[in-house]
Figure (tube, rainbow, N blue to C red):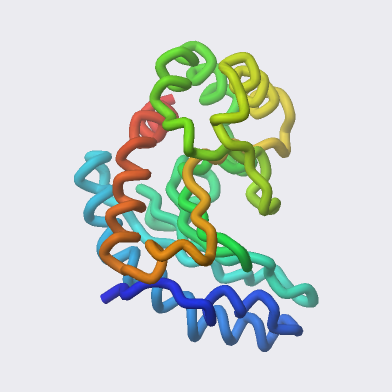
Length: 208
């Protein structure tokens, strides 16, 4: 049963060395991802109408530099998530992120972007203004919806369509010291509600 994230989880990212940090990720964080996935996969399957599968980042390509973040993904594809619309939950050293994610490996991202641009009014209105957007999952920074207007949002989607490496992630950032992270039930409810709010984007992108 997921009981929440702790200060020690975030301290994982200050551990030096690839091997030591990966050991801490595997021992401290990945079991929590498994607990979260056991709950949310069923919830998201009900909301989406698709069976959903949990994928936990292995960071297998890393040979020298330790990861600055780690994450789990929930996706309708059992074999992998990177080429498909999916949901993510993960940690940097100072926050937890909950994303609906379209990363650069998605083969039809141009068509998805066109679909989003065709429905930009409804999509822009769908996303709560306390949510954030990122165009690169490797970066900690994200842009709050409060700080952009519809034209800015349209420009982001246009970049996502036209620039190969640009991604589109939208959701929440929760600071490491937010009390909700220490309450497993509250966090799971927040994650489920975030994904429920973003489900129209998942469904639109999955149907392209």
